[in-house]
Length: 80
Image (tube, rainbow, N blue to C red; front, side, top):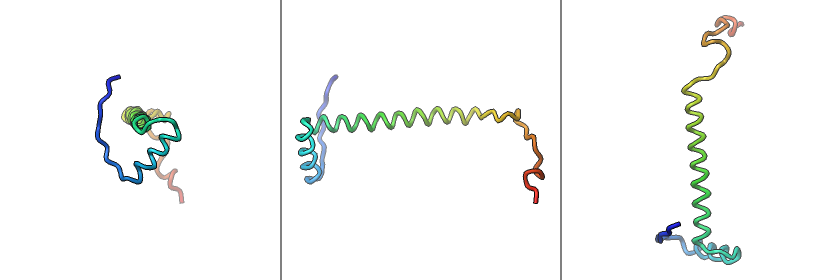
């Protein structure tokens, strides 16, 4: 996979903590950021696919077994 360098600006305390975490895990900050971004993108893409599936279901409508016509009268639903 082709790689490309970027410049990332972080607060010093965050960078320091990230360096420690990377060292403890035996990895690099670049690898940690790659994993974080991949996970974030996968969640977002999964959400978007689910949203599109649900939008398709809603646009088609649901079969409620009534053939699109109510089997009740308003008065039956609102008895007092």
